[in-house]
Image (cartoon, one colour):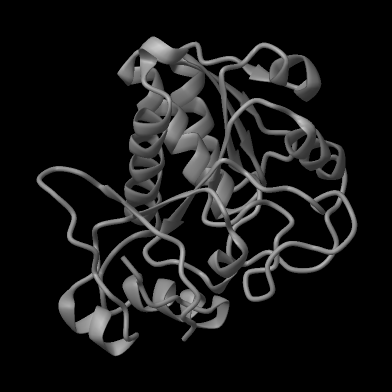
Length: 236
């Protein structure tokens, strides 16, 4: 299944539109995104294959999606651990962390030790708005993910990848090719370089909005928030 992609510029514009004329709050969009991520984990890593999930979160909305996913994973019966070294003071993110602490979900500052004791990793460090240099403490984290044999699900983008141009030729993300990717709302142009399993998630687009941005709405089934699709090379 080939789906048209959404550029970083159009992704930002779409988010603004969803939160204005679309009447969605950022909380709603993050909740739906995190729910989609949690369902992708369930597909990739059924509980019987291992319940320990390490969720690596960055300081932006991608990290917020990871926090939501961790909460849902706990309710599914997994044992999530959250790595969240740069926690914003924004009220939304603080509420998300409080929800996890109320469930006794552990937070760790020792990423290598947590990586050595997990069955699966959710890479929710950087999303479609990432550009520029990877800053501490994330270079070592991304290198560890690239070198590890633990399967990784990247949220919207493998961290350090450029949304338009794909993986970096050098630096901490060079050679980072996660086992799976979940594109939120729509695939981004970087899927041209991605070689693993690919999911699309986020069931909230109206037909009018999808048509405006020339997006394909995947044929989600039943209550599923995700669908597995092939990678493709089209670009908006």
